[in-house]
Length: 232
Length: 232
Image (tube, rainbow over all chains, first blue to last red; front, side):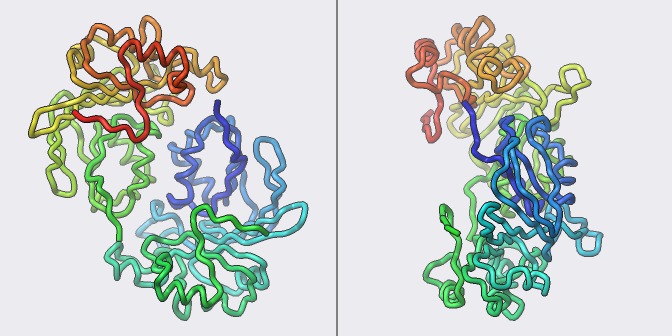
């Protein structure tokens, strides 16, 4: 009567767009939620996530910087994940306005290297990232495939469009454009295939005819879309 | 860039299927959330609902047993609602296993009479209800249109199908069938049009060829479906 093919979920951040989907999986079907200790603690402390019955939904802490073979419903899934902290921010709804850095700490935002255990083929998935640093550069250098945070085009995009009084930096997202942007940051990394994901509806690259789209494409970027299939 | 036609939301219960959708409306667009004090307090106490910024999303308590003209984003919506408590239960994720009645109290589950203010035409919307009582009978008697809790067909449906070890009563829902069921309860109320909503995926009435569907139809019930349009 009921079945879900989802045996495991890896959460990379505690923001609503990363965790609210868990509420749709509340059918007493067994699966495993993987996350950093910071995010698992958030889920444990918020009673609405009790709809994921502890008897059927296992919580499993992701080690940072070390590979872990994923399992779910008692089955090895054939996938290995190495999670690593990236520059980021605590979830908006958990911000402490009085705290330095709004209460952010390591583990609030993760990047993932997802490895097919049998073949060793892998790709990177980094849907949220506040900025590139040398550690992340070294991880991504020469990668076959990277999915990367494409939230905003420009630092003042949300303000200019009258949507929100916050810069990209304040939101915890690197911008695509600019000297500190992701297009520039990736230009010397030698990544074979680069795909933007987690794209905000304010971002002009979503418009196929925009100059921003053309600029991203010219720099070798693809724009992720619903239903996209990618073969390793 | 962003717009939602939704100017007000009336929540009748704190369960995840009634409140999680609010998290999808977190775009700093103004609207009003109406609910019983019990449920508004639940939303206020759970930080994940802080994504509905207090500056743009007003919370407004529904009086019980008295009409209220709805407004949202500063505009009268032309609709009046009279909310009334029905037999029900506290949200599953808020249950206190040690408390009598799991901690339920009046206001945890509401029925609504929704009135077009200009014409006075109205209908009832009761998506959760643990049982019929004389007060509810008197409200609904002779109504033109009632949408009613169609969660389960049978008291032991979830147990029989191996989905959950709980009866319909324990879940806080009246069943369609049986001596205490809604088909029997409505049989003498003289309601012109009766439509089941909030139908669980275990309920055999969803199968168009089932004997249960035929039985509900013979008793004058329609089975609600996605995209259904109803004219008053």
